[in-house]
Image (tube, rainbow, N blue to C red; front, side, top):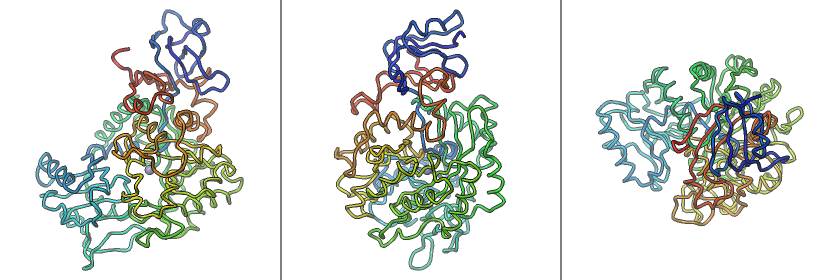
Amino acid sequence: MAADFAIVNCTIRTMDPNLPIAHAVAWSDQTIVAVGAIDQVQSHIDAHTEVIDARGAVLTPGMVDGHQHLLQGAVFAQGLNLDRVNTLHDLRDAIAKERERLGPNAWLLGFAMEYAALEGQTFHHSMIDDVAGPGPMFLYALDVHTAFVNNHALAISGVDSARQLADASVIVCDSDGLPTGELLEMAAMRTVLDSVPAPTKEQKLQWYAQTMRDQNAVGITEIHMMDGDLETIESLKELELREDLTVRVLQHHFIYPYTDSEIVGELLKTRSSSGSMWQADGVKFMLDGVIDTGTAWLEEPDSHGEGTEPMWPDMSLYHQRVRMFHDAGFRIATHAIGDRAVREVLDGYAALPGGSAGRHRIEHIETSPERTVARFQPEGVTASMQPVHMRWVAHDLSDPWSQRLDASRCAHAWPSGDIAHTGALVVLGSDWPVAPYDPRMGFFAARERRAHDVADKRPVGTTRALTGEQTLAGYTINAARAVGAQDSRGMIAPGYVADIVMWQDDPSQVSTSDVVDLPVLLTAAAGRIVYRTSAL
Ligand SMILES: [Zn+2]
């Protein structure tokens, strides 16, 4: 069969153990038809084939972001980006400028606010009221587990005291019982979020499409989307109709402790609903929160005496829900950051009929001792990790994350290399909009165990770094294996889906000092060229 496209004059890192390196590839519609030396591909080229001369560039399978909040992130990203704003002075300055840009009374929305910007103080809205107004303000912390709001936002939302919420969420109050403007976890954030006017459906669809295009430009062809519901399935359908789904999206329905059984019943029916570029065969649970605010579930309390409770007040309900989705054939992803949460999820999966057997996964795993690290491989549980989150942690333990933990738990921070060393499946991602989605930053962080833009060049923790090869696998073949797609995706091989990235050089082999700026030249998602530099 004649190919639609062929790329020649390149080095291909196929990830196929039968042919690790090749020099030409051709595909027809969505499917790769030939991989090998140029003469093996030649017979698939005819007059209608577009032949792209890669001029010595390197091809890898498309990058899979194993943990991301694509649609949510596209909406957040319309607000003020507070990534790397890490002093109170700069935070106030950024808020003041945004208020000036918006004018009075409009909602001032922001995301990716770093805890470091509070400089060790407890948040109180009086710290920012003078610059945030006139008008309401709502800022998501970088992890989207906490929000910071001003007095105006509290007032128009009618939040004037603590209240009982459906899960472990908290409206933080001062000694007089008045809300400080810090809202811990989703049910608390919703008390104010419900007052924020929603964008129109059309506006959101445009933001989604643009966000996917932006991600194509850094090599992303697939996203494991760790949230969603029946409404987001409708958005995915609409995007596909418009041919705007330029990344494949694997939705994981978000199951809250308070998601009622009627909705759970509806979601259970979606197991086999899919389009050509999306599917909805996963679910996401959140067993704990985050280290920085004391909401992670720890074996021993943190330095504030916190971290002793799971996000699910009734653990038997969590296990019951997990069992329902397991029996219905869903892939289960559970957010577990603290060492206790990770252990409890492993115990829960192990108790399921047949166990995980390679199907289920744990998200984040920010600290875990060796005995827990050793369980992933034999128990067939995928570790879904984001080394890029080490960007907020310092070798000298001076950061808000480390300050919550003792030396041993800091030493076992992000044990991605140790888990990979046991032979367990490690999938890599960003958790965007929590951290930037650019996989090149992920390559750097995985190999160096720190961010590229910090002054202290020493690694975080004492566990192994991932090698370049392990990192490449974490963004490609491992991600395919984690979702049972290893026979059709994650490799550049005949019969596989044509998810391909062309790089100036091999991202797994170039020195880490070059990887963050490594040019991405072309991206094909399911055979469609979704990004191409003007030089090609
Ligand atoms: Zn997430």
